[in-house]
Amino acid sequence: MEEKLRILLCEDDENLGMLLKEYLLAKGYTAELFTDGEAGYKAFLKNKYDLGVFDIMMPKKDGMELATEVRAVNVDFPIIFLTALNQNEDVTKGFKLGADDYITKPFSMEVLTLRIEAILRRVRGKKNKESNMYKIGMFTFDTQKQILSSPVTGQTKLTTKESELLSLLCSHANEILQRDFALKTIWIDDNYFNARSMDVYITKLRKHLKEDPAIEIINIHGKGYKLITPNDTEA
Image (cartoon, rainbow, N blue to C red; front, side):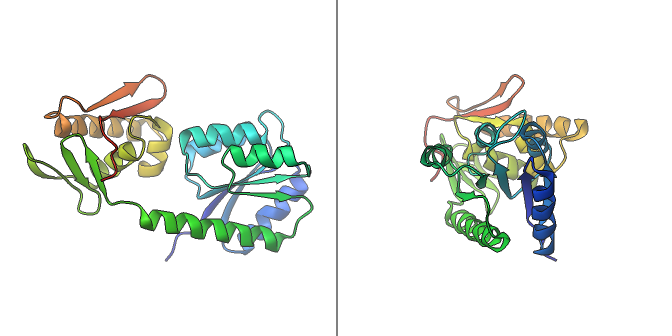
């Protein structure tokens, strides 16, 4: 059975928010509603979502701020902005922040779902085109076969969790991989035991990569990890 796509819905108008949520549920999505940007961001860090629908004007943290913080964690997270403001500068600012689409109120529910479907098709297409091979210093990492190889160490078969974690590190090479994002992506839940488990896998990956002194996986206190590699990781 195919898993339902999860939508993070942030709208401070509760009546409109509930209408949107009920409509999306009826269309087969899983939608969770939050009425301010701060609550939406906390939910984003704790749960796994496929797309965000953010109202621009919200208390505590507006849609622009929310999008900025979400994209700092996951640069590829799809976002649609909702706004009552029909001003060019807002549209321009939204797209500069990386919005995938922008809908001005009032709008048709059907139009929103068509926009969501179009964005998700683009995202799936992009993922299908992504490389399955990464170059990490002297190592080559085949994500499909879960094999890490080098002229020195030969081939090492990674476990599924090792492979998933290394894939995330490679996709964020020389950037911070947020701890909460890694936990929710691989372990779904960011509880204490899963966090300790991830630390163990980080240690294992360091051992696998130790033969190349140019490669490091460093801890970024209070944030996450960073894979330091001298080359572009995509092979």
